[in-house]
Length: 438
Image (cartoon, rainbow, N blue to C red; front, side):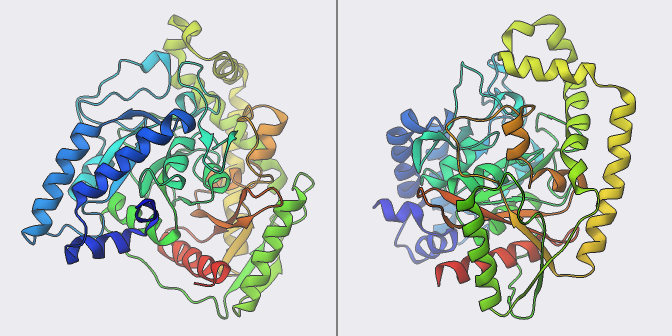
């Protein structure tokens, strides 16, 4: 029955509505899967088994009575553990928040509950989403190779989806923290247009860079979760024929050969489907990494100022060191970086006036053994393809494009105009179908 846990959300919904499967039965299978795999993968911090079973029982009764709440009704999902959940611990994977129990749900949780989704629990992350695992919580391991990371900071959400523990999960993305784990784990992850999904009740890393979005095994499933998160989203069917894709950051020095090979194969698949591919240069793109650094760290330091003064020893050492860097950066550097964001956004919008979408690798390499430090050399390389789109706020989707020479997943990233998230996901659906032959 493990195959059932890797079915699409639409397939599960059809089984529910035909009476061949019940939400209670499926939820029990997911919980058993978590019990079996979580000791190895470390994807969940808190599993809310009792509550999930009650929610599943309610969903079953509602569906039998004809009260259908839509495609997420009775679907087991997970939530990153910096999203407020009433009466359930929300730790941010930090000793500082280990006993934090919110009194009310974040609005996005309220929306998902209204859509009938069943929450299985809270997924592991880098401490406060800043890129390094706190030793109290540990790194999330990759379902494709448990000796490697699932990625930070939404690694728990990505690993849970990839391992069949749940059907979709919510993550956050400030410099790539949805798309990087999605790439490493071989799933789909969307950083939506800035502000499309409410971040109220989500503990911030950087106010002006944070995004909240879906992770799922396919773009179609991610679209369904995004619909639940926004309450208004509609899927978009897209044909690749005649579409124009602009390749950005091709041939970057830190791009591993196996990733480059998978990316080029994806470009050829687009051409086979009737799309046009052309190289595009984005002015000043080489400045994006430093600009994000100069915005994220001062904002994070401001958020953590009180705890850094009162409880510095409770942070993981590298989390604390990065926050200290934020205090050291000047206001001038911060404001210049914010000015640069506007210019960079203009450059991207100019490029997108010439093509239907932009495309790049998601990450320069496959999953490493450990999460690199955000402020280190490898950390800068890891976010090289994802960082610009947090600065611009444009929708950016990582889809699984295949595996590299070592059998590890490789992601391809699609970027479209503001508020064309449905279109971006539609392109993802079409590309996945072309790559898999389905």
